[in-house]
Figure (spheres, rainbow, N blue to C red):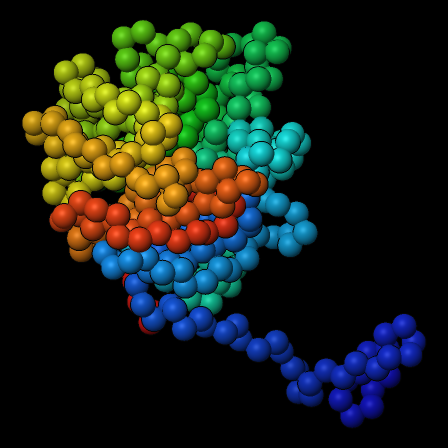
Length: 399
């Protein structure tokens, strides 16, 4: 090493590389022009990237793709995403599993054998603002209404398999709920809750979180008033004939949405192809509200007034609209060329349109995003994304 005017580094003892004088630094990251409009950020699980698309009832447009993750030469599986209330930051799970890539630390859904993490990104520059270690195979991530806390479930199928192999009790298979303080990205707690926890929703007061327990046909109710010491209040069967631990689930509760009207919890069941309702007023499932949708029910969304629930379902790739007061239904079929394996729906803040995300079939077919108008109910356009998109978050114009 020698100093000649600018600081110099000898590379291979032959090539001199000059660095800036005066404590030079890398330039600030460029801010993409598309951040000045409302948009959706979508995680591409099998491509380690975010896709950005327009957020309106007009035909959808793809704005750009941004690579994410910690290791650019390995697939790490970004899985689901949430945006802060002010739109300044995003959080997403770095799952360390990637569907369709075999076994091992970057293997199939729920079989990751390395801990995942929760990553915080600047929503404009995509800079990493912090990262918190969670547990294996993180599933859903949601934020508190003020954005102070992130809640991460874990679809830890490997833990269940290990417990069954060892002849252990159901408690040995419990996956955890992680709570992370977003300002510091410090994990406040990691609490075992139930087998293969996945879908999550917070009660309006922020003191209770509801989790689907896919392989034991349960809904877990957890008191999170103290983020450092959550407490499981109950684990309720979602239907009258739940499968015992170690047997294939009868219902397969996978995702849920909470009504902004009465706070009821509407659970999407993969195996029974229906939506079932938990009433927090009675502390029990409401047997009178079981709505069959005919396919594999996935991540649903409510209208702001709670009067309509939009339920996407795979197998037939349709959206079922449920009138929550009359329980009447109507369907929208998604065009086969536009959508394969619908995963979720989310509404635009103005309630005039919606975004639908479809997984595709990696690696043969890319995923896609569709724009819908809600009045009249119709598909207005679609774009291809990358491989296995699985989460979406709305962002306001910046700054």
